[in-house]
Image (cartoon, rainbow, N blue to C red; front, top):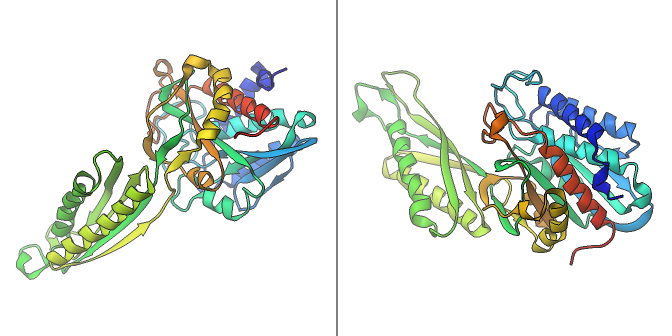
Length: 392
């Protein structure tokens, strides 16, 4: 019996139930206490040994009866600070928090994997390590903390996936090379000299200087980066001023920089710092830049892509395995891929007929829940193959 055949109607209903429970009770990064307890309780019911190396998050370990490689499967468990606008009976019960990226589905899928594998230890060679990782959505990165805590110790390779609103349900995308961008955050503080709105000549207007800087920063990508290299520099917030008749002495900008290569990532930071400093000083002000490195570009191992391709084709069919272009969103699975051979797959979850067609991080984000059994079958196919050998 092929392992993916264990995904029956009863288990599919459980996947939906777990996902909807998690959706109704979202928790932000490093605050996933109830989610962690929910996962741990289920693993305990299935006699799956687990560890909690951090305050939140769980690492389950399914050790086979025979020696073999160790393969890690990772899901993310955190939600976002978004107020949900869907009107389902399982909508978020937490004000200002929502699973708007599919992590509730990812967690349910991995719980299904744990339940099935817990009954197959006599057929497993090696270890299947299940990483229920916190805080994917934060620059601080739960992946980085998991690695520091030893989550990858002894692991030979790792697989991750994402339910994807940009891909129709029933399809999968896997590709080698860069698949997602680095994710850095910055805060720029412009300090001038405030004063009365009627006497601008007595001030150094931080608001005007910062407004000019926003425009000048647009030249980083358009004039300093090779046009053939993907890059993004976005100013997301602009805060200055306290009253209509007061010239602000300080302005604060925050934003993000994204790239698909380490070289372009370096160029973005260097250019942002240089332009900011020169622009402020040229207008008589001072500037400080707090540039925080988030996850690096996510690069799939070619050998791992080819290793999981048969599993993907078995899950959705040969013609439904596609190669979508890289995306500029960030994903801290990239930290794992820096350490060991890794592959990150995209599982189609879009279905406009049921309203599951909004982008990730949208207050009406939804998934077609039939994507979850597909993802689970893909992981089971992968794990079954992994217990019999290693990719070259």
